[in-house]
Length: 364
Ligand SMILES: Cc1cc2nc3c(=O)[nH]c(=O)nc-3n(C[C@H](O)[C@H](O)[C@H](O)COP(=O)(O)O)c2cc1C
Image (cartoon, rainbow, N blue to C red; front, side):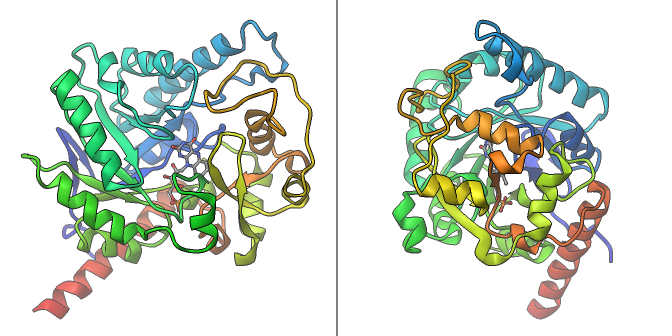
């Protein structure tokens, strides 16, 4: 199957083909190893900035410095292993958000993707550099607010926007209840509204769909409704190069559909995880007392949080699943094998090309 027919995702001067961004996955699930392997396939590899640096065993004083220095090193490492496109994911909810953005700009990453809050001041840190700025939104309203603010204060508009739907992994920008009772808008519905706003700008802002996209056919479906590309995360966990421990990857392979469940995270947002004994115990109100190493999340109150989310997620990445949960998208149960990134991307590309070719035949 020829891949000539596959549209390129253009973000300014960046040409992304196949049009896939690997979603940032914290803590330590998408670091330099995964990101550089993905970038070597023509897609965008993304390093998640949160909780790097194995600071757990360090003193309180230098925990923040350690994680920031580790972030810098991960960017350098990724860039030394690829000539491809490297982005970073920085959550607005992090207390050292500004410092992390500053580091990413200093290290000349290609793009900063930023959600878990409104990245209203993101352009402030650019210093004239050509780093693409890409907010993550869950509604058209949010994009409007960001565009208005960026135009007014920085004469800048987003270089692209990621729309993250309810089927995504990790923390979700929807109410717990709307996810549980299926009343949240679908990704397709939100995409239509966001595309309308994105297309009101000249040139149009590329819109990237995320959440529950698993196959090349899924990618084709979103391109058909006007997406310029997709962001995929869950699918990249079951790869040789994913930075998490093998136990983390095997939790995906062993998961059944009914094991995917929603928790209320101390971050103040719901999150999708794979059920296990730890999840059951925290749902029943179990707490895990902890010393806060540094107040990493604005939205967490360490005095009241039932457990430290950073510590739990770092346990997960280290494979200590008795003391943690594994973040996962709603399709995690469909992962059946661990493959090299190159093999995964080739498969997705073939499926996408074939889906697009079939469509062409049908419209002739
Ligand atoms: C294990 C895991 C960790 C994640 N961590 C983050 C994160 O740190 N920051 C963020 O903005 N999104 C995070 N996400 C969301 C992804 O970047 C992505 O947008 C989403 O999962 C896409 O849906 P999919 O997993 O169904 O492909 C995470 C997702 C997973 C599966």
